[in-house]
Length: 334
Ligand code: CP
Image (cartoon, rainbow, N blue to C red; front, side, top):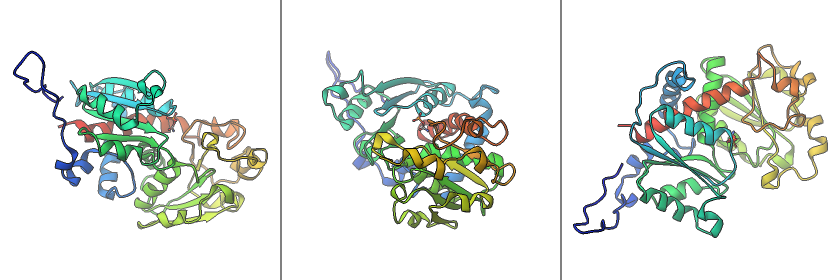
């Protein structure tokens, strides 16, 4: 926590916040966690290793080291969230930090205060890190350019959801081992999905092959240009053609809050839903992922989502606590 400056009088002098322009880009990048794109693969692997080590503590099966004792983490969630917000809170508390939660309703954002002003005011109260979810693509970077404390992106518009990618890769690694050469299908509303973008960057960086699947209206042209690592990305609009040739499948919901899928919902399940019949065409023990929230009966059938062996949907949520612990330790500890 930043020491209060000595005002030499009755009231403290204005807090002199760390000036981001005086902090080197490398120092900032080492603590912020804004995107998977551009993250060195060595850092991605280190975070995955750290998250895997922290998993027993994340689940309450081991006593975690209280790396964040005395620290305060602010959760600024200006878009709805269940998994990400709660798991950041649990992760921070397991590490000994205090947590403050702020949402759009109940905060002065409802009176028109900007995201940046909100973040700067929260920082002025002496928090050690800001976790931000926003509908603004690039919003987490924007906040990081205006505050001195580390900033963690908890999902910014259609841009990235980097901690989701960490938990997705950890879930896959626990199930499949090294991801190099493995083939991951990501199915659904790719155009509006920050989850797909971050997962594709991470999987390719780890040497996996990614197959993007969805209706033409929900798959942006050029998405395959993400492939800059040792893996590659291909695009298909035919889900049935790839079912027997993949090592893992990630289903996505149609993001109606981003005006996606107008008019396609009635036919969506028939063409792109992971139905019981389609699931039978997967190789045995193919892990089935979904970031949540799940629209049951649309992108995935109940029996598939709840499969006790191959659905890793709840395991992903458990990995999320460990992944966020690893990111918080990187941001604040030491
Ligand atoms: N996967 C995910 O981001 O879920 P929430 O919106 O509930 O946080």
